[in-house]
Length: 115
Length: 115
Image (cartoon, rainbow over all chains, first blue to last red; front, side, top):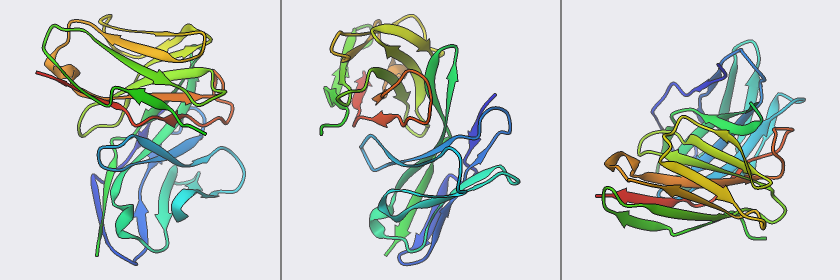
């Protein structure tokens, strides 16, 4: 089954330091991958996606992610964290099965940026 | 342009009651999907509708139903509410039925509390 895993429930980082939120994916199926962010009591906001091409994908709010086929990973990164980046981050995998288009999400990683 | 809009934003229902949640997709998007997000977990796929037809269904009981209207807006109905139905219900829209590189965009969600 196509799946993603987020190994860390929480990541703490000091403001101004680089941040990484980890995501790994199962080898079966397509390697398409998405990142979404959820601020407190809000819906999901799309950050970026990997389809094909350049392994380094740039997205919204200064975030980027690197697709690594050998490690089956798609880690989200930002060079300098802001307090406003504190939120819940979800890695997701799109797939079309039996005619439907749906996302399978990881369990989420809570990012806390400490002033 | 307006994003995905959902209503109501918050509601409280009693066990056994019925609830209807509403969603308007992004203009030009013909596919609407519904997801349930229980506190502390990633969103789970419930339904996808495209051109007014159900195209996919997740692992949810028959108490959950939905429909899509000619203007592509959608309603999610849940009958015989249980305490475990308390969650954030997210509506999402995409341009096409299948994944062809398209992005799924989410609304702010409807918070349902069952007491």
